Image 1: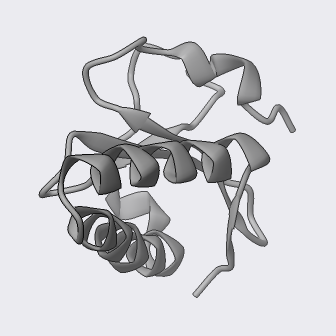
Image 2: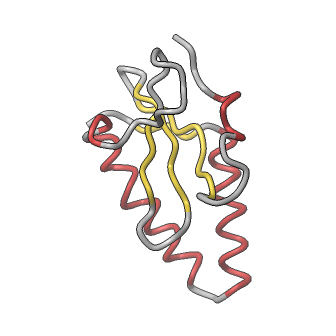
Length: 105
């Protein structure tokens, strides 16, 4: 399994979503974090099993993992020795706002 590293921006996004869910219903934030904790090891163990985002240049391989219970996607790149999470993005808001975080190697 490859290590999965979250960008500072992705960490901030997880925090913001957690605060939002906590304000909606106590305990919902824990369920959100459990979904994140469940999907990150899956990404690390088999990053290529997740779908590519096809609206990017062919040389940029960016993938996403959807959270089943929440309208969020974990956007990531497999960088060889590790996987880099670029964003934990709401599925319906500001599509592609994270594009400036793409790692070009």
